[in-house]
Structures are given as C-alpha cells and as structure tokens.
Length: 92
Image 1 (cartoon, rainbow, N blue to C red):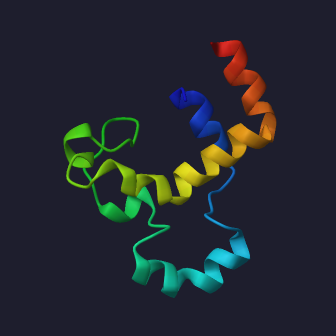
Image 2 (image 1 turned 30 degrees about the vertical axis):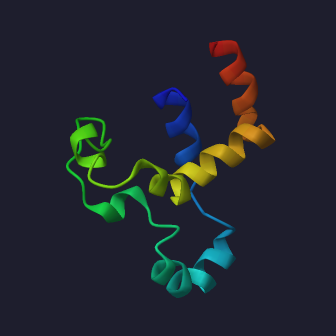
Image 3 (image 1 turned 60 degrees about the horizontal axis):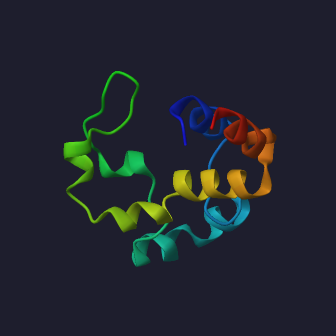
C-alpha cells in the first residue's frame, strides 16, 4: 500500500481486535508476542518516521503481520474504510 494512503488510515488510530479489547487483552497479547506496535521495536527510522529496512530484518517479517498497524491497514483495505479500497484501486 502506498505510504500516503497507509498514513491516512494510521492517523485515525490503530488496534488489533478493537480499542477496548486491545486495552483489556494487552497483558495477554504482550505475553504471547502479538499486537506489538512497530514503534515498540525501537528501530531507527528514516525522515518519514518509517523503520529502516536494515532494522526490520532483525525480526522475521511475518511477526509484523500481528502489529496493530498491519491489522488496521488490512482491515481498512478489506472493508473499504475511509474509501481506501477505492483509492487503492484508482492508484493502480
């Protein structure tokens, strides 16, 4: 997904299961190693605030799919939240 579309969605807030559910389940999720925000990794970032590729390679890439950022973006794309699916279609 293009950065500018992703940022538009992420600016609205991120969550894994739901805002209340994430708050309630945070201790369990943290223990399981899921729903860990990209910012929690403490990676060095570029001028846009995105983690450097060299930093991201420190963890198996599949682990990032359980981040609230990734789950929020997948959800937005599949549900067409904020018209993102339409925008993505137009972009391509």
